[in-house]
Structure formats: C-alpha cells, structure tokens
Amino acid sequence: MWASAKTAIEGLADRLGYRVLPKWRLPNLEFANHLRQLFWKYQIECVVDVGANAGHYGRFLRHEVGYDGLIVSIEPLPRCFARLAETAAGDPDWMVLNCALGATAGQAQLNEMAYDQLSSFLEPKHDQAPHMAPLNQVRGRVPVQVRRLDAVLTDIEACRPLGPIYLKLDTQGFDLKVVAGAGSIIERVCGLQTEVSIVPIYHAMTDWRSAIGALEELGFELSGLWAVNRDPALRAVEFDCVMVRAARCRRDGMPLSGRNDVRD
Image: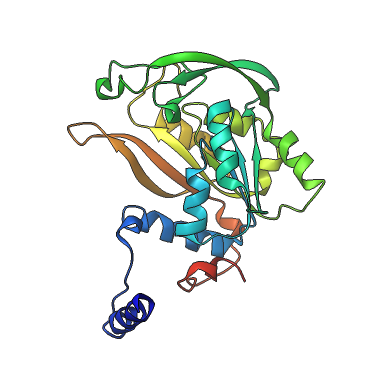
C-alpha cells in the first residue's frame, strides 16, 4: 500500500514540475548534483577516497550521487578502518586500505583527535577557531604506515584497470603531501576534491589561497566551493574545494536524473 501511495505522490509531483526527495538528502543535494554531473562529463571510473574515516563519503557516493564505479577508500586509524571495512563489506567495487598517504613512504605518528574525523599529522591550533578546541584535542598518537599514492594505484591497476580518476582528499592539512606522492599519476586525475581552510586549525598548514594555487599549477581549475563548517558568527572555517582538468571533459550537456545516470 505504501509503495503504491509513494508512486502516486511522485507521479503527481512530476506532473506538477516537482521532485519528491527524502529529507535526509536535502543538506547535500547541491553538492551531490554537482558531482553527479562531473562524474558523467569526465566519465569517472575510479574514486580514490583519502581519509575515508568510517566510510561516510563512500556511502554518500553510492546513495546520493548515484556512483556505482570503483571506490578505493584509504584510512590509517585502526578503529576507523574497522568501521570502514564493515561499511564496505559486500560491495565488490569498494576497496579499503589501512594506511596513510604522503609524499614519501615510511612510518609516522598520527595525532588522533577527540573527534576522530579531525585526526591529522599536524598539531592542532586553537587561537583562531576556539569553538573547535574541544573536538580538535589530541587524545593519542598512533603509529601508521605511510605510502605514496602512485605506488598504491600501481598495485591496484595490476589487478584491474582504473580509468579516469577522481581524487577526494580529507587529511586535515596534509592534502598537498598526498598530491606530491601521486607522481606522474596525477596527470590521470580528471577531478579532485580537497578540504581548504580559511581559518587555520592546525599549525604549519597551507592556507586556502596557496593550496588552490598549487593545484592550479598542476593544471586543475576551480569548479566549486562548499562550506564544511562555520564559526558561531557564521564565518567560514573550511570549504570542500572541487577542481577539474577542463581539457579532459568528455561530454557536453547535462546527465539525466536518477541513480544509474552516472554510468553509460
């Protein structure tokens, strides 16, 4: 009965020029629509999710963007990785790796913060964003393996082709180090997403202008900015910055709506 009512409501809304969506999709709707169009235009076949935490971004790609290609999620913290592996279980096109990425391979100490999504190789800085201090406190230091992105993707491609790549970076001030470890593979990245900070919340982190400038020097161009968080005065603290290589755009026009329209 409920399914019939839902179909009838959706049909009526469509005839009136509206679209029925669940409330949980509304906060990320604009961002999801942008990525859906980007993935379609650039024919993205592999998303590399660096700093995957418990798999929130992978779920977002599957359930809100409608992406059904390969996801490679990389997370160094053991507790977060255990949740990530559970989230990805049963999805044959979702690979998970327990390591960090950087410019050089080796071992390093990762600062595990009170709010684990803020964990970073950098030390927290609280003077300009005191409202984040309770979350951005070091509760422990965890030894982690650090690999280069080019080595990781070379290993994966020995088993399956990757195709055009979208690189998502969320390493709390360490994103450009990950890019430095991509080597020549960065030329195969058609689009990327990096978290840039207007207000520095870590010591020695790259400011947002320099971060965008460094990526522009590699051939990327700005596609959009979405606020990640704001302070109590509604000033922006961090943005998700999406960039593309316009020369790699393979399609004109707009994708159709719906889950499977990302793919052919």
